[in-house]
Amino acid sequence: MARGKTERQVLLQALAPALLAIALPYAFAQDTQQPLVPPISTPAQQQDKQSGTPPAAGNAPQQSQTNPPQTNAPENNPPEKKDEGGNPVQAVGDMTKKVAETGFKKVRDWEEGLITGTYVSKNRPLVPLNRQQREDIYLQQTLASPSAYWKRMFQAGLDQALDSPPQWGGGWEGYGKRFASREGQFITANSLAALGNAKLGYEVRYEQCRCNGLRRVEHALARNFYTYDRTEKEKHPQWALYGGALAAGMLSAAWKPGHDPLKEGLYGVAGQAGWGTLLNLFIELSTDINRKLGAKK
Image 1 (cartoon, rainbow, N blue to C red):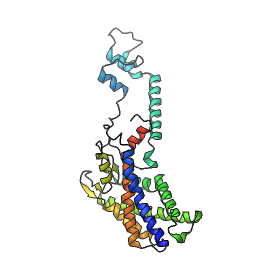
Image 2 (image 1 turned 30 degrees about the vertical axis):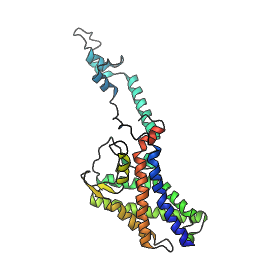
Image 3 (image 1 turned 180 degrees about the vertical axis):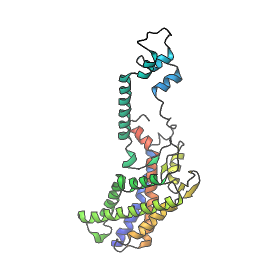
């Protein structure tokens, strides 16, 4: 009976991310045909210069450039002091607006940190990482982000519902053992993958597709199985990512009663393929999800 529960658990855990990965693109199918988001607009002063519109009345530096003072201007009001001054009220207003927009963006962009972690948006170039950046990303994705814990809490909940392994029992004690097992396997896999990617010089971040339509879904699915080297152009299989998943699964059999190391390693590879694909789809469609939540960009 215990063996039947183990096989059923493996089947459910393998199918869950695959079904979610299939269903997620259709939930936002209406938004996938929209064009790429344009870059953030330039500051107001640059817009005034490009469009030729007159500057605001309180903008002393632009006033002096548009309407230069005559040579017989009074000595008590030199144009140079006007250029150096500016409108402090307008400056404070612009700063307050910028802070408010930044705060709203942090609240709205729920996916980064809570769900997906670090990724490269389609409006930013993909540049090679240095050693310090790799260490920061590893710590964030492994220990410092909420997603490093709630995903393992969810998986431990599935294990608890399926009573796997049955030797750990139920209740909070059994759940704690299952959560510790999932977390230990995750940290081991991430650590091995980070070391391998650093040695090979492979990219560890997902980058959003600079495309439209179904190509975005294709990119999210394929990107889980390949990455780039230091050129950020040449593609290579995700050797370190899946090698870490295989090794961590095999090591987890050491503390799971009655589990075969090879099977656990293969289950780890299958889990990486399923949950990694689902994560890529969340990242790829994060802009569409934010738009559903009322964001303008």
